[in-house]
Image: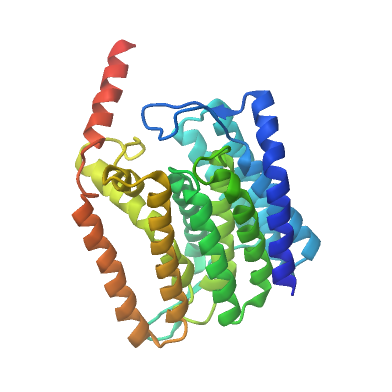
Length: 353
């Protein structure tokens, strides 16, 4: 009941707050203008992240979940990264400045008690305590999730849908492995992005911005740490990770692609999975729906894995991941069609100054 109430409150609030934030963004000039990498053609307001944050946090506060560490991590750590993202949306921070902000938000989460203190060996079942590695691993985990969701925010409704799917998978996985206190928190995140999605699906009338994307990444990282990484069910963490497999693999492909082409890893390009789907002739809605389906299938596979022993679920998961990598290879995601073009553009700009 508490989980359903949390979802409903967040959904209704996001549905109501998003148009308010859209109007505010237009009045203060908080809009994203099209550039050479954009797929949108007109200026779009970008304060949707504020509606998502307010809706999810309000739902959490009203339903008062029993897991205070996770609650405070999402609320206060989320506030830090939301403000960092908001500054970036308005002023465009340098990469190192954004990373510092992400590390600070992750440190806030750790200070509040969120930490990967142990992991369970999926093969032997042995619980291994991490000791001094706990804090750096947790910092890396949180920052990685923040960048992961931010990187996936490339098409209308893409990041919101992926986060919604992942948060719902987390609700069911947490209930299955015996961590029900996380369920209302994950439901609040799911409700907020699903309530935001009608305004963000193509053609989008508002974006979540870096503020919203990085907040959602932090929220998912905290939920997964508190609800699943610490679970004694060895394969539990696979559920949300598999639901996020598309952005995870996309980020991995981008790193390999850019390093192999000799350009900075932070250099943006048009070789992401969603760009390739558009090049195959799909429209934005088709490309986004295709990624939704893949995320749903892998999320369901992750949930299914919690019902099976590692000896059975491990090979199934491995084959599924291998299939995705083969598909990515066929799509040319390891090639550098546009990455070198991006490097040339950077070189041209540098020559003009």
